[in-house]
Length: 180
Image (cartoon, rainbow, N blue to C red):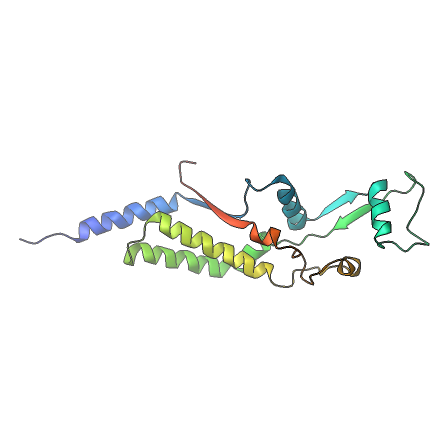
């Protein structure tokens, strides 16, 4: 009598790969992060123009951001201006820069499901963790544009976006199964 070990294993592989294909892996600053951090991440990812208030103008002037004789101390409400924060995409650009690497990470995870009997959850966790690392690696490059000379005067770090590590450390992954 011949025992069929292959059919059960093929069934397991098919089931795990179907479960994996139904999962979504979200990498970035997750929605459960505090709203201030989400706002900071959005501003850096897409850039922003913030209308300058009198309070901002006074603060920035006191910090030396303006040339005293030209730009600082305008009468309140008389001079309008904006603070322009340039786009420094770290999530979208991190994925674009690592497109081939991420494709390879996925292929390796699928191979582990087949050869090493990983579950779909193990494969998704591996993909998510490595995707976070890829974004971290990109984040650690010299993002463009570099910090302005004014910003450099008040910063402890040369690297754009990295001052306290809070934004960097908030990049995580989340997995949703196909039903969500």
